[in-house]
Image (cartoon, rainbow over all chains, first blue to last red; front, side, top):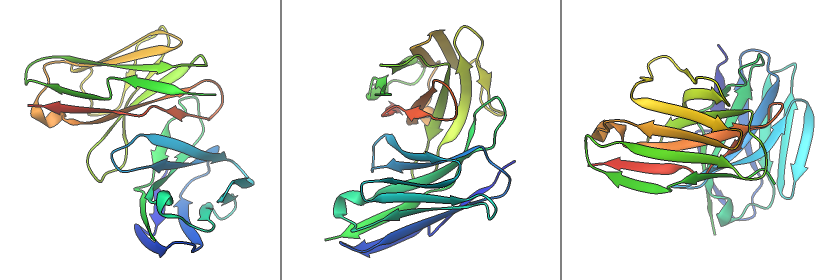
Length: 110
Length: 114
């Protein structure tokens, strides 16, 4: 069973700061997902990656397969980035199930 | 592209009644749909996996007779909470997968059982 750990659990930043959220997992994966959930809201898929790095606007996701570690970076953070960020791993196999981290609550103050 | 909708977004029902939640993939055919529930300040918990035209696979501890899942077409799956009780109050989220590992999530349905 894959264990997915996220850090930090809570993160408070000032507008404009560079944010990093970390995710580590215990067994090999086929894909890693970064998800965003606003309070009381649904989930938005930000990235799915299996190697290297992806960038979308101010968001960057990286993954190091050898170290079983992924990071989500937010540049020039904004109060609208305040949300819970969740890392989830596909361990492979035909069931495509995700194992979720507990999430990181990000609060960006103006 | 890749939009998943859920209906209703919020529902309040009385204890003992049944509630149906729909999950639709609007612009793609979903090979697999997943149903999750989420309690406040907790992460998602997978309830079941459904493939079109076949019986759902339930996770350990999830009562299949209480949470009925039907995946009748490649764009629609339904979750029916039967004989709902207050402890079933939760946020229910579906996701859909077409091919590969990408999953697209619905906006969720908040169920309150009084």
